[in-house]
Structure formats: structure tokens, C-alpha cells
Image 1 (tube, rainbow over the protein chains, first blue to last red):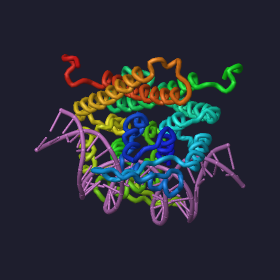
Image 2: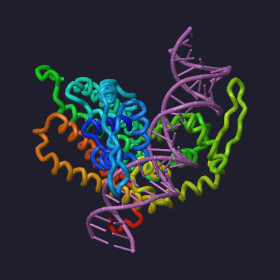
Image 3: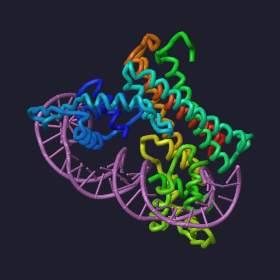
Image 4: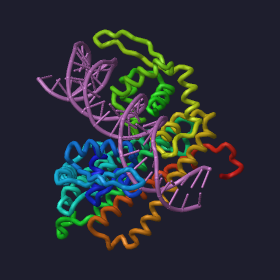
Length: 184
Length: 184
DNA sequence: CTATACATGTAACTAGTTACATGATTTA
DNA sequence: TAAATCATGTAACTAGTTACATGTATAG
């Protein structure tokens, strides 16, 4: 589960309550991910059982007690291992974004490799969709009806895949290279 | 549930077995959606109970019997109603793509309105992310470390939102307008 | 002989949503 | 006086994944 890892990234930046984590998700991490407070509380509960996080309960007057969560050493280790391990071959953008966000300097070589890998998956799909496009719809201006609509959906696929490739090219250009003398 | 609607779209184009629907998902509809055969069989079962689809069982020698599903009048009505009704305000691309794919000529005015609505949601988010970008990272070339990585993830959000807007602009330009005399 | 296509499903699980429930403080 | 913010959760449900189970025909 990647929500677990996203929470670890957030907690590795700074500790906070479930409520605060929900709000952070609505803002920064939520640029590409939404998680409800219910889901976050549930996940934090399981993570506590698994020793990835701990919390300190703080009494407050007028408000319910709050639980301030922080990442444990086990959590930090689990996160780093996850970042260093290639993900699934579905090319999940959310998962990759979490890894980019959470990678420590020592994780960067593995991260770059993973970005390359995911970029290749999306480039391949973009190519595949473009081949469908030219094969099945050689004259897009002449289309109408159901065929036009099918074409437009395919166009969405092409643009989405190519957009991901463009983003990852930006990422690779900006991320520090391990060996600046030998170009990639 | 939108898988239900995606299956109705597929069956409204032509009838088929659960297996065939799975394969069609892997190809055309699967450009932006994946569904496993297990999930499709389960969903077809529920849809049969709800009267959206029916099947005819066909014996085959050497192969297990197959169930050829087709859409019912209720299913067709349900699909059309769903297409004509605005969706959630999360701006789900998958859902919109299903509507574009499934809309009959008489659904087009409502579809255009929905595309406009979803385009506006994504344009708003693109703007919001760009405002974060210029406020929090005025000099992107000077960034490094965690801050650079946060910026790159935000860039992914900007590109993704803008990419969706660009796609929907293409859709609006290509889809026939109800009144060609008054420009939008 | 191995993989792929055809054809169906169950069981157990993980992920995520929606509705409900409580209650104080601050801002408009 | 109404809404938003802070703060926690449970219960019921829908959606989707992974592992298991069976069996033939055909192409390489």
C-alpha cells in the first residue's frame, strides 16, 4: 500500500496529528493524491501496530486529546527500502511522485533508475497509442459520430502518456546525476 | 460505480462474453482503464441481477459453456441517464472518457456541458498549482535537495492538469456544436 | 513441450468512500 | 447564528487486487 509510504514521507519531514496529515495531503501531497481523514486514521492505526510510527498523546483543554505521530527507525528503514526497490510495471505516477518526494540523497541513484524505468513504460504506451492513431484514424478531420468520439478518447491517452514522459524528462534533467562527467 | 457504465458502453457497441469484454478493456477502453476478468465477471453478475444486462448461455464442444451478454433496454436507459447527469467534482478523467465514448447523438449537448465543467475544474487546479510554483519556487534553477524534489512533484501536478485542459480543448473543438452560428 | 487464447469462476484480502457521531473554539 | 477549524473515531459499503482452481485447442 502506497498511502502508508506517503504518510511515512510526510512524517519524515515533520511529525503531526492525523488531522494535520489529512490537511497536508489536501495541500502538498494532495496535488496528486487525495486521502480522507477516515482512511488516514485507519492507516495510522495499522502502522502503529506494525511499528512504523509511534504517537504521544497530548491533553488539550476544550479540545479532544490529540495524538502526535512520528516516524520510527523501522519506519525510516522501511521507507528507504521501498524507495530503493523498483515498483510495479503499471507505471503508477502517484507512487513515483511519492518516491521522488521522499528520496534521501543516498537514494538518488536508485531513484534515477526508477524514473528511467517508468519513463520508458510511458514512452512505450505513448508510441503504441500513436500507432493506433495513425493506423485506425489516418484522417482525423474527416471523423464524426461514434468514431470521432473513440478517436478523442484515444487522443486523451496519447496526451496523458506523452505528458508523463515530458514530466519525467524534466525530472531527469533537474535531478543531480551521480557522475556528471559521463552524460546519460 | 463507473466500471458498470464502462461495461454498458462496451455492450452497447456490441454484445460479448465476459472474456471478450476483458479483452476489449485491455485494448480500446483499457487505454485509460484496466479491469481484471475477476472484477468484470463479478460486476456482470450484479448487473444481471439489476436487469441492466442479460445473457444467453451457449454450449461449445471442447470449451466451457459461454455466456453472451447483451445490454437491456433498462441498461441503455440507465447509461443514457448517467451520461446526461453531471458527475462528481473530482474531475475524474476516466469517468469523462467513458461518457465521451458512450454518448449518443442526443446526449451531445449534455456531454459538451460536462466537458466544459470538467475542463474548468482542471484549469482551476492548473492555475492554483502555478500560483504555488511562482510563490514558493521563484528561482527553480537554484533549487536542490528536498526542495528541488518537492518542486518537481509540483511540476508533475501542473503538467498533468494542463495536459487534461489541452485534451478537453481538443475535444470541445472536435465535437459538433449544437448551434454553429453562435460561437462559444 | 510450452505458451497463448478461449472460457469460467471463488475466496481472501487491501484500498477507498460515505454516512454517522461527538464536541469546543473562533471567525464572519 | 452559522460556518469553519480543530480533533477523534466507527460502521457499512463499494471497488479493486491477488491467489487459487479447472480444462481444451492451437500455434510455435
